[in-house]
Length: 147
Image (cartoon, rainbow, N blue to C red; front, side):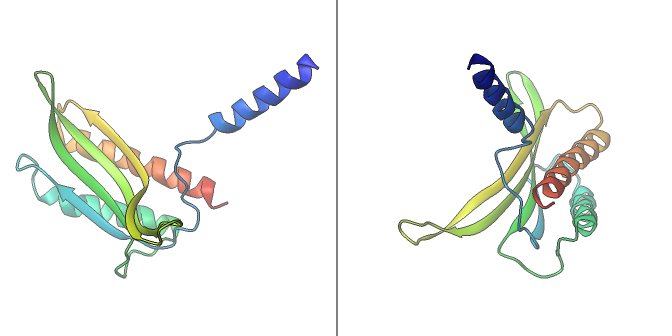
């Protein structure tokens, strides 16, 4: 009996340990790409570079970004203070409208989110490398959720 309980526990643990995030990306067929730079310290040229990265990843996943959608995949980039240090915060999030089941109100929800905070040594390298990592993780979860 103890063996069966242990086996069930380990099976459930393995199942949940494999989850990448608590978010679900199945059924996402389109979104509108957005990049928001919330600092004057970040050159505006990165906005287009990051938009192109989102579109390229989306094309690989066969997600439509050509038309306006109420769902958005967005990079939000800003500087924050961490103690005496200034750090770069990069967030990748998918937001969309949803309807509450109980009140039937339309609300805006975050249906995926991943972020990194880093002390910048080389802005271009750190920003683009981190953005690429966040998009890669998003793509991997999307593929897993849409098998």
